[in-house]
Amino acid sequence: MSFLKQINPFESAMKQFDKAASLLNLSKSQIAMIKEPRRITEVNLPVRMSDGSIRIFKGFRVQHSIVRGPAKGGIRFHPDVTVDEVKALAFWMTYKCAVVGVPFGGGKGGVVCDPAELTPTELENLSRRYFAEMSDIFGPDQDIPAPDVNTNPQIMCWMFDTYSMHKKQFLPAVITGKPLELGGSEGRSEATAQGMVFCVEEATEQLGLDLKKCTVAIQGFGNAGSFAAKLLKDDGAQIVAISDVTGAYYNPDGLDVEAALNTCRTNKNWLLKGFENKAKCEKLTDPMKLLELNVDILIPAALENQITEENAPHVKAKIIAECANGPVTPEADDILEKNNIFIIPDILCNAGGVTVSYLEWVQNRMGYYWRKDRINEELEHIMKKAFDQVLETSLKNKVNMRIAAFLLAIDRVTRAAELRGLYA
Image (cartoon, rainbow, N blue to C red; front, top):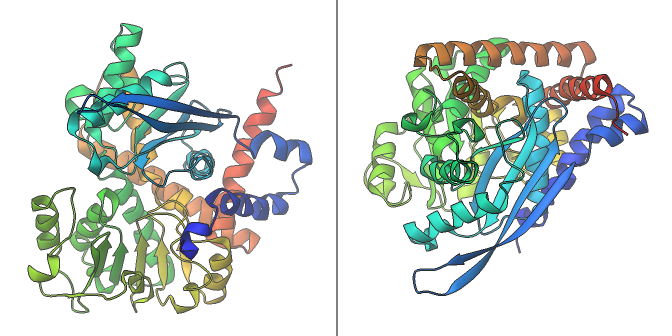
């Protein structure tokens, strides 16, 4: 088992919370109200496979908080999903929503499976079974899921349809990340990356860097990473390295982003396999070395715990934009701060996805849908306002951006909890 796998993501999340909470001088009662998850649900999901056999899958849904609004958070399908991972992700969602001012709480779901090994029918059966088993938890005013790792708009459609059939109503607001044909929002697909780009634009301006002269390395070339590459390229930045499960690809003079996207389009499961044969670049022997390249901006857009105390001393980027959830461990955080690396923390940096999910939910409730330019205008306003508030908190309290984001978010959640009081 690798070092990365041994790091408990929920323990990392709790360390981040404790560090910020100590600066707010919260009482034990205040901490008790907002720190731990309010509800953890674990289910066994029987699914009939294509050969007629029945296989049991393990599923989770964690609601961390509903103090500021309905729980909100994605559902991931992955063989390595654990309840601690889902707890950590739900925790981050609570404070992600709070830091950008979106009126949701935090939730997250997961199913232990490898979607690549399932037929389309098996995948649909599993998706519907998961939502049916959790139908008492989900609802437009209770808990609103969205896509995450290895889930997509089609899976959201199956889940939305399952819920609507149970309720015998057309209820698109129960889930976000849907296709436009079923109440999805313009701009949702690229929202996470677009929100990150708005933050990067603010960060480069703050540090006196010209984004058009910046070099960028992106770990992870899924939805967020691929859109990040395209959007930053459009902004004039030079993308020099990208990676996915097939490896890391590097050219110090800049990669052909369109060729990378075309490679993914032609490969099964959106992979970069063979990209080194289609564009001028080298395939790094160790994909993790992408994190240590001499670039201006590093974007971890893969999974948790990628930058640790082992590799943090070798990170050379001026800015780390956390497009993934929890890509930097608390121990690595301390090292990066000492090395004066500016981190745009995940609960701010990748909040574009949940922000446009909120806008999708609002449109579903109204039954009226906005144009893409309005969506992007709303997103830019929300993200840049949140960045400025976090930066102001950072400078005022002389703390890094992560602690500042948590200070802001924890204060908002705490105040909401106290205003609501305790129902006894």
